[in-house]
Image 1: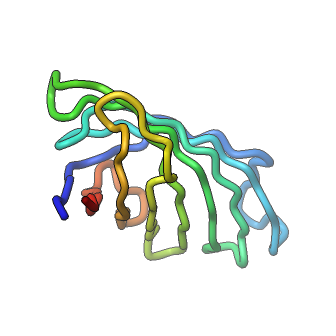
Image 2: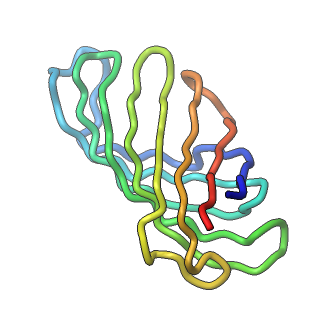
Length: 134
């Protein structure tokens, strides 16, 4: 198994319905989130999340992310889908993901693995990992 690693940042977050503090809980929301990747994979992605807020400070989310990336800086490119399972709260967010079987194209065709990231509250950048199988 070869580990792929790097850093990521949020490039966008659009949540619907968007609430300020004090919104009713529990509640469901949908978010379209953009990420930028650096490291062993260099590219951008969009993730569609469904969030369940269990209280004002946190909850859980599931999502599918479509990552379009080069393998290394300027290397061959491809795309892959990642299935997210997340927990979020006052302490930050913890995301585990798995590659959606058969979703890889180009340089990422046949990619199989699991990984994720942990980010502190209001983090601007965090480390990601993908444990590649095979």
